[in-house]
Image (cartoon, rainbow, N blue to C red; front, side, top):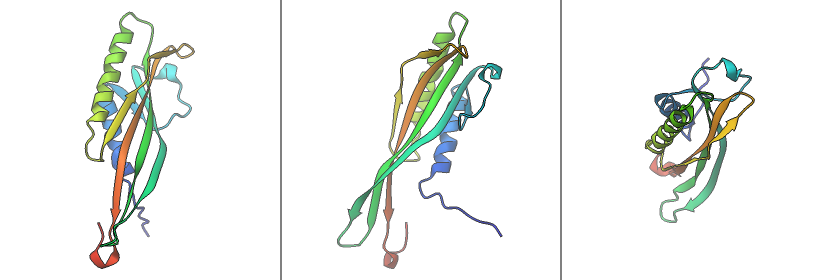
Length: 150
């Protein structure tokens, strides 16, 4: 017996699109921060996770009974690059800007807002670090049973 789970918010598609953007910007994309030995990871790494889902009832239409929900889906992405050589900072920043622009261009899931944090250093792991927040605007409509479903 196969169990199907519904993904009404489209999180699976959003995760795939975000991972693709990070990979194309030159990062090794990982979905969650686990017990990774960062010293063993070569190149730039992006560790991302779903931070929050905030939905609010947008009300019902009096004439049709259709209900709507709107809100935001927030992902936090920790962008990390190797530190140590001259020019590492510039190439890391270029990759971060490319990832930020790519995430802002994800159009299939509603409005997108991207915020890139300031550059920092993780001296314990000899990494350059930036945090990127990617917010997807969500708007869903539920249609009354007499009229079908959307």
